Amino acid sequence: MTNWAWFGLRAGRLTSRWPERPGSDGQSGILGMPRFHPERCTSGCSDCVSACPSGAITKNPDGETGIDYARCVTCQRCTEVCPTGAFETSTDWAFAVRDRADLVFGVVADAPSDPRGQPSRRVPHALKRSLHIRHVDAGSCNGCESELEALLNPLYNLHRLGIFFTPSPRFADLLLVTGPVTIAMHEPLLRTYEAMPEPRFVMATGTCATGGGIAGGGYACHQGLAGLLPIDLWLPGCPPNPAAIMDALLVLLERRPARVNRGHLEVS
Picture 1 (cartoon, rainbow, N blue to C red):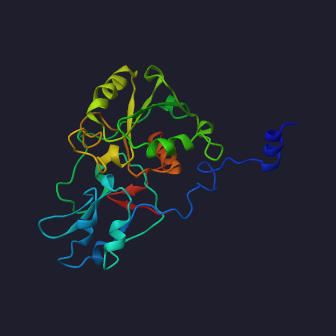
Picture 2 (cartoon, rainbow, N blue to C red; picture 1 turned 45 degrees about the vertical axis):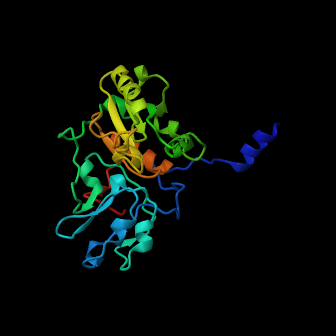
Picture 3 (spheres, rainbow, N blue to C red; picture 1 turned 180 degrees about the vertical axis):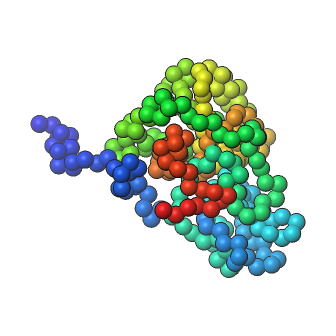
């Protein structure tokens, strides 16, 4: 008997029963998206706005503060500088939404909207138990790629849910995009999408893809995926952890409900 076989017998089952049954999602105690309590804000204070490196926190002309979670890089700077606790740390990791507006909490200056102007499409029943993903790195720092790779380890074992990655867009149902979409990756991204058969879906994964992140809007890249392709699912996070990505894929397949409404997370 080899050492690996003996180790496997001693360790037993390592794959989490989550999300199909109660079990660990592997993310206990890890800092997530900051919680916002606008009622705690004081007039004239802009410490959080000044500290936010990605422009996720803004004030409108009336002085009201809002946060766009699609642009939040979870750096926790707002929680560190806020004198009143309006922003506080949490273990709420990023959750996926179908409507871009659901990532905005409070009043955000120049609040973005879904450029398609139509609700997210429903996934055909035939794909709900067998989904194939083509991933395109459109300028990511590789943080999101590290989390995607973890989906295939023994703890998460994404394949048990009937979800697989494919190297060819010809066999893909979902285009999963990471990165703010650099100029160099713009055309390869569009060609990949065009090569996919209908019905085809698009998921913006990570804050760079959902809102541009830190580098978005610079001379060499777009402000994320918005306006370039029709987005069916938005998942912020810098990076979103494996549990968040898995949850998002099941939301797309309508096997789990979306848990965010207008920036508010429904705690189960």
